[in-house]
Every structure is written in C-alpha cells, then in structure tokens.
Length: 224
Image (cartoon, rainbow, N blue to C red; front, side, top):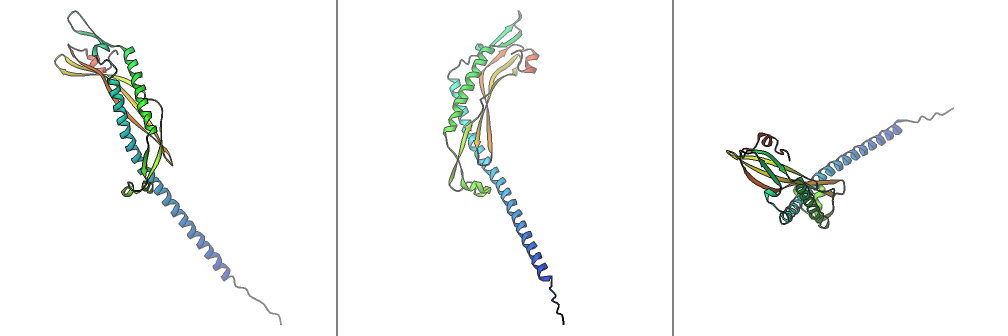
C-alpha cells in the first residue's frame, strides 16, 4: 500500500513573514537613526555657527577699531585738504569738488592697515565647547574646548561717500567717510562660514556757510 507524505507550507511562510518583519523593523530603525543624525547635525551646525560668528564678530570689531585708530594717527584730517569749494561774486557756492587723488591714496592706506590687523586673527585661537556639537543650546557652552581653524580671506575693499546734512539756514554739515568691509573665514568640521564686518571712518567734516545747491543735497556725492 503506497504512503504519501504531505509537507505543510505554513512553517516556511511563517518564517518568511517573520524575516520580512525583521527587515522592516531594521529599516524603520535605520531611517529613524538617520533622521535623528541629520536633525542633531543640523542643530549642532546652527549652534556652532552662532557661537563662532559671535566670537569672530567681536574680534573683528576690535581689529577694525585698532585699524581706525592707526589711520587717524597718520593722516591729515583737515577738511580743506580734501575738499575745494568755489563761490561766485556774491559768495554763493557754485562747485564742490574733492581731491580724489588724496582720497584714493587714503583708501588704499586704510585697506592695507585693516588687512594687517585682520590677518592677526589667523594667529589667534578660537574654540567652541565640545557639547556645542550636540546641537542643544542649553548645554552648548559646556564641555572641553575644541579649537577651530581660522583663515583671513579676500581683501578689505574700501569706498567713500559724501554726506550733506542741513544744520540751519544756509548752514550745511559736509562729511566724507571711508567705508570698508573685512572678511574672515572660519573652517568648521562640516562647512566653512564667512563673517564680514563693515566699518566707516570719518575722514573729515566741516560746516559750510552759504547756500549749498540742491543738486549736492539731493545726490550727496555731488560732483565728487
């Protein structure tokens, strides 16, 4: 009499389903861990960037002030050295011009001084607390210090501007400024950030007695 052996497929199916569930759970855990990693990484970058920007901005301000003081000690701040005013027979102002050769020379000098002072930051250490890398603001100031590399980048471009401010009847304050912006790059573990510090230096100013043509008042720069 022949015998037949019937093999059940249920154990194999259960094993296969169990394997699928395990894979699904592992995939979910992996995605969750990846999501948490990117979240905390983003948070850490924001905290570190905020701390480093604040530190470098303060140091740049100090360097820019030192550069300004050095400039003030080396140039002639006499208004008549930079500005020439022409008047007609009645004493009315007909033309206001600036000595651009002197102003351009002054801007080049200021730019060099600023670059020299800013480059000193490269020799200084900047560090952030180790727990800042967790991305939690509440503990971002705790832990051992981690040193970061600093590199001064670019130059310190200068420009000048001329401002006219009405002080009263036929009295106008004329001011000439040099604007400069210095940049510093901080090399972080994930990405680099650039901090720029703008500054203005008052070259000279004087109260002009007499009616200043509306053209100068409206355009500021006048024919300079």
